[in-house]
Image 1 (cartoon, rainbow, N blue to C red):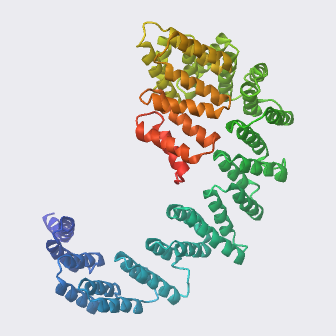
Image 2 (cartoon, one colour; image 1 turned 60 degrees about the vertical axis):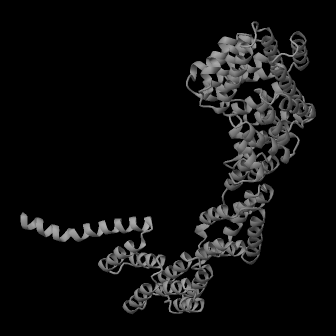
Image 3 (cartoon, one colour; image 1 turned 180 degrees about the vertical axis):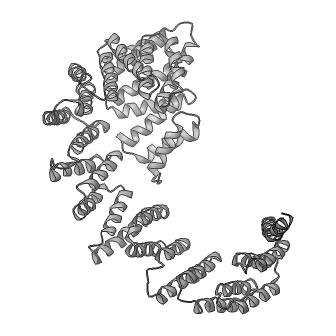
Amino acid sequence: MRFLFICLAILFFPLFSSGQDTKLAQQYYRDGEFEKAAVLYKKLYEQQNRNDYYFDRYIECLLAVEMYDDVESALKQGLKEDPGNIRLYVAYGNLFERQFKEDKAEEQYEKAIKKMPADQYQITRLASAFSNLTKYDLAIKTYEVGGQMLRDNQVFSFNLAELYRRKGDVSKMIENYLNSLDAYPERLSTIKSQMQRYLYNSDDYFELQTQLYDRIQKKPGAFHYVELLQWVFIQNKDYKNALRQAKALDKRLGENGARIYQLAVIAFNDKDYDAAITAYDYLVEDQGVSSPFYLDAKQSSLRARRNKLVEGYSYTEPELREIERAYESFLNEFGSNKTTASIIAELADLEAFYLNDLDKAIALLDEMINYPAIDIRTQAKGKLSLGDFYLMKDEVWEATLLYSQVDKVFPDDQLGHEARYRNAKLSYYNGDFQWAQAQFDVLKASTSKLIANDALDLSVFIMDNLGLDTTDRALRLYASADLLTFQNRFDEAFAKLDSLLLAFPKHSLEDDVMFARAKVYTKQRKFDKAVELYQQIVEKYPEEIRADNSLFALAELYENQLNDVEKAMKYYERIFIDYAASTFSVEARKRFRKLRGDNI
């Protein structure tokens, strides 16, 4: 056993010693003690079968302390022992360049390329050696000569694209990525990732688009170019042209509308409803009922048409009636059942909030929530909406009953939190402020950021206004006006707010009254009046809790209704700079970056 132990010790001691030397050399190198590191790296190079890594580090250390004679001796010895190691000529050139002997350096660099063998691995290593010294032109020349030697001009295209990127030559970078794609079409996803990472502005994407058009003309059968062109249009949010390419690819590849449906979803989510409608309608009309996307496309087309009207606040009653007929036509075709429950809920929403037919909305949802085998989440959402509609009719007991049913079924779910929030708001409307505030305080921890933020706002609002007065009469008047606004009884809401200001002149609720009026004007599509009031709040009450709310409302108005991106950006930016602690801060920054064109 002793003999065996001694043998093992003799066998493993050099490995242990080598490991210790490697760690120590690395430590010296990191600490800038290059002379000490050089001694160890030389020893490791000699011990580890002439390992290139240790030799390169040894040379680096010698150059760092300007021991040029030692570097030259080491390189000469290295070339003598291994004349085929062309990377040594690059190191030799770097040595001369350190000594300002540019001509001799260039001679060594050219010698390395001239002596390069027709071997892909050796070519790549030489190009990397040049690249590590930021000799990008020489690295490019290495790959170009190497490609000629291997009789394959595209084998190094991906590497060349990376080098041109480092040089800042976008056109040549794109050209070589496309060359790589031409040689290896399976790289399409990788090429997209590279393009998304390294194309920074519209000019870069235009250059890619131009080169793609040229290649498609020369190779009309190269579908990977068409697919990349579609991707470019999507990046530029040009969904109309993206759809043209998607149609061509869908037919060529026999995808049965999958690509077109996916594009329609992207356009819908980006709120380009015209493009989404065109794509969905194409699936319905061109692909027909046999398409696996027929039902979804028809549903989504309805939603897109509805959203286009109501989100833009630009609708007329005849347009709303046309959408109503489209929903009813859909239900006539597919029936009113658990499958179409979400469409029924949307129609009910249209009737209640835009066509002011609460009875019809309630009848639709009353029937929908009782469909056999209906999805319980769809049913719960229907009950929440139905509760809202009853509240709009002033039937408070029916509303709270429905909210409570959802809360009981989904106590720890976002739906349950939403139901609890609505019940708490009911108590606020009714003047039971202490109970409402207690519920809002609990909901501040909701997993839904929207519910949590709304609950926090109302909790702070109640606390601020209850703590200032011995009576809650002013707050009761305000909450009553808030309910009237929710019920679309705008004249009565204004009258209630007027009575509040008359009974309590210069009250702390003055900015809240202005905010409430602005919300009504927005609902009435009187955007100029809403903007005027929001701006007054920001100017007169910059320290009050309605200031950041008003800034966010202004930004949304300019973004969505008034189509002034510059002003929208200005107000979003002001929120996350001047009101960094605001619950709107994160969302404002996100929207600002999106409007600025950042690739989020």
